[in-house]
Image (cartoon, rainbow, N blue to C red):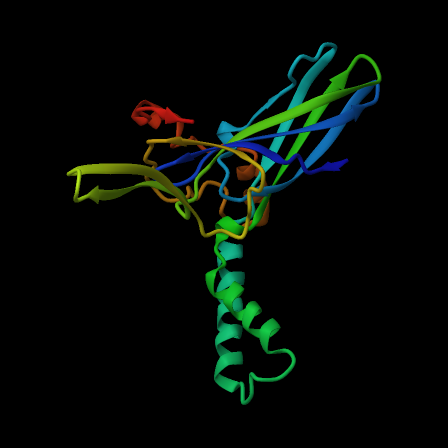
Length: 232
């Protein structure tokens, strides 16, 4: 069964990306249940994915299958999209017609699209002793430098009294195709480094499928000591 748990909490890293928590109530039949989680960005780190069941009994997590799209194939596809968009611009004789807005929107989307805007696959297998409804939760790290935050200070000076008023703000930037509406936000001073690993991004299909079953070593967890504090 396909489900799409909404994001309820997002701790955004100052260096980009962050920790996402999603929850949804699901109905379980007695025995084995499989749920395919939709809208998991390809930029998620499979080795940091966790599944949990708040205040639930008689439920056992059997297996979590994760897979991200092949980066080489996706990059080639995106490159062809950008080339097609350039051809449309070069050969366009009139962009003032009824389809102008739609054409410009498609061209702009193709120009800014990246691998991180694609979606991966996350399948959760759950064993239940009884028929029941539970709350299913998932967490994963998102490695995407287009989502980040930075502090901002506004200072106003009263010349008559000689006093200054300082206001602090947090500016959140999200330049991805995914929105996180009505989501509780947290902010952490945390830097991540390195490019997306190529484990599993192979030319041979059989080798690719085998490699995708290997969870790549997370670059996030060894760097957790760099997280100085979380601001809520």
